[in-house]
Length: 329
Length: 127
Image 1 (cartoon, one colour):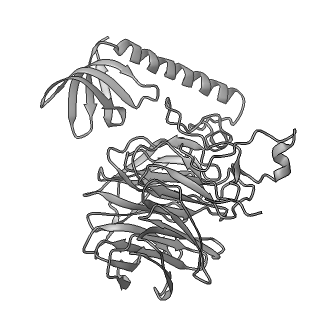
Image 2: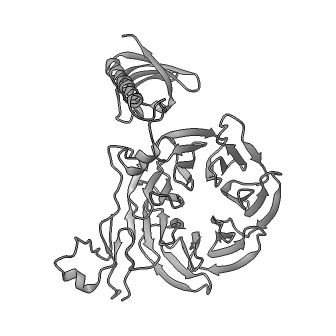
Image 3: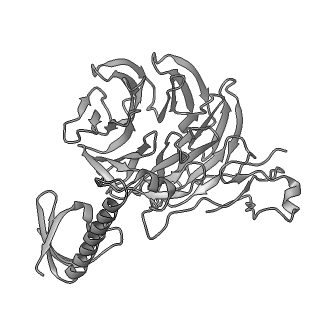
């Protein structure tokens, strides 16, 4: 029986949520970190959305946040001109990395030993976390503020997207730009899928997929509204996107057809990401909330419980929360 | 106007605790990943007990110091070569903020202020 999607709303932030990231799958499940303009990034249990803790210390809007694969470290990028590294188990601040302007993006290498940062001073920086006092390696080239910077190709290369309407692929060792993609408009988001080496980019109303090594275009899909972020499912059967019209769109990756769209957020969607197991995707919005959405609507997973009609009247049924159509947290 | 029934949910996601920054020390993950941070020479037995005794003593001493500081003039040494005297009021539970009064700054005396503990390198006061 077809069921209607019930998004789970995670409240707590008091300003727009601008970035979010999942960790890898750990023995304790997987985790989610959200960056918010209220300056207080939060960590949550990935499959339930339960709040775990808040990283306190930034003195300005947090524009970027990430977790390492094991969810033992977190990194954040903020308007207070710093990137910070945190112990994601204790919530303690471990390192503050000073920059010369607003920092927008942070990304760990697979081994968590280096941190890549990018921001409004147009410079990419690589920090060796075992030598935090040492000067970072700097990569110059972008002519406008960097919005997103990611490690790729086994941490040997770097992908960066900037307001100069380019995406550049850099070699970490030579610090040279290997390839540049130019667009008519600024890229709004970028996601790198290591398994399959795919790059997901959004600009205007377009979601585009590129091969990460060569930056060859695979395909593009146009959405009904301006898109701020998109994410490809780990199995590469779906992708989801969200933007200006507050909705989440779900597409079939092979056929490029829109499968369904979901209302729920009360403001533009700024970021969306699939969980590492692909069972759900999380969205962050101007409305200050994160929402979790099921990939397979109706499946029992996390806090969602598949209820067969008979169970609703059974004496043995556990207490169930059956949401009314419009849920407000 | 959908006729499809909505997916049932066991409960809503838990929100933040207004009184703490979280990272529950009793969670299985915390206990597994955060053994005592200073390794003691013995992994079990008397070494651990001695370490715990010393830790408790240090913690108690720290808390008593905060109590003794209450309402006293304290000199705070902070980053960027900032040295400011103020009257110490109280600390919050996570030792993230100090509430102080009559904070003397180059711009004048701030009647009430909160100092970020992470900005403070050291502080000193007369007993």
